[in-house]
Length: 409
Image (cartoon, rainbow, N blue to C red; front, side, top):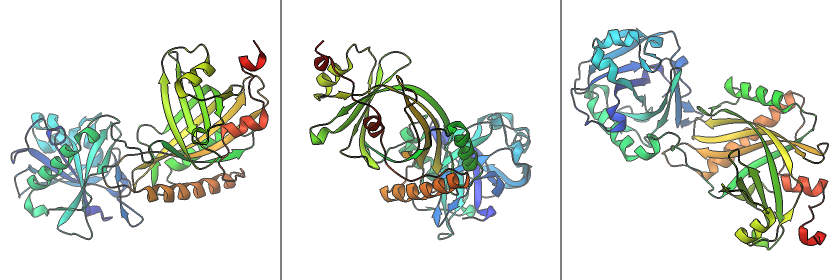
């Protein structure tokens, strides 16, 4: 699947994606050979990729077939790849090839067809789910290749591909609905403790650029959501008992008032912990009373801390699993000299309609953790993979906040 002449971009009416019209043999379509330098890897290791990104800015002449979907005799011409689209509209080069302004106005990137090395009479299909003036994002919708040969004409593969999209239209055709989360109700993360003098902005940007440059092979920045910054207060209370409820509950103020409430279940610090988020849009006058009433627990509150965090999100081309590397600096509000710096690696979500495996997540977490540790070591930052929690940080550095009952007030 890695040969250039096996990767083709199929463009045509958007109705093949959104179902607003029934595909017919008279639809004007075009098939364009994709330059290697304009795409991410179609094969990652020994696996067909789940995720594919095409860039529009590559200046290279490519072959293009212009035809109707029902024809088996396309007209072959050449075109400059970077003249295909301009600001999400058909570019001048493609308009000239299509020869009809009405046809051009309806033409969008639809699918990428990739020849299967195991099935030379079939293709894997990637459908387009994001489109911008710079690039487009596709994900694979075929677990096994579709039966198709170029001499059969395009109507068959177009119709089959459109049907695959319609089966998964809620997932594929709605912005940011194309995610699922494995390990529902849990979080998976490694936490490295670092020197508190570390410039977390500087090291975050270094890792971000390393991922962008392809140093972490088989991964790319998450499309459209690759870098984030955070700065928020965290008010944490331990839940010491009973054993099934042990862990902590923390309040994070919302900019519009109220709180995000984060609850974590664990008996001891671990890579895998229970986690659930809630939202309370209204103000809370007494956090402890709220916890007792809503969650039926006896909280042990700790002094609040401020958390500054920079996130890099990136995704596996092979599986569609999305991960984050976060650098954060936590410091006590009332005593800022008590602080902790961590580098956190976490599984976040998955963007795939294909069968997915928990085992892949664990294997990729190990692969990323090893790369991250090597990268930091090369930059003079010594790390040791761990699971040290914010609750342990508070336990080790301060006493629980006295409650009104304990003070007698």
